[in-house]
Amino acid sequence: MSEMALNLVLHAKLDSMFGVFVEMQKSLRIVGKGEKYADLVITVNDGTEDECIYLIELKYAAKKDATEAKIVSLKKEATEQVQTYRTALEFKDKQVKAYAMVFSSSECVYCG
Image (cartoon, rainbow, N blue to C red):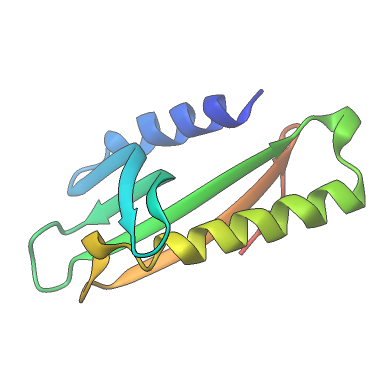
């Protein structure tokens, strides 16, 4: 398993859902930081009054590398990235929820 494989699996599943628009590795314009790429950007109820955008940043640690220190480091990195993505010009005046997820082997060790 890899981070890209996780992206692909989640993208395929979410993209099959009615009323859900999913973009993988979406280019975002961040003031003062330039162009960044969010792992997954999920838009629910696109163009309606109750539209909501979910940002998901995924990190993966191979089982042999999944020490507590590595997981904490990946958690911090993913959280910082997803909080930066929330400030993208594309999301101005929109309801945006951001999630960082760290996986090791077949389990999610941190989701928040």
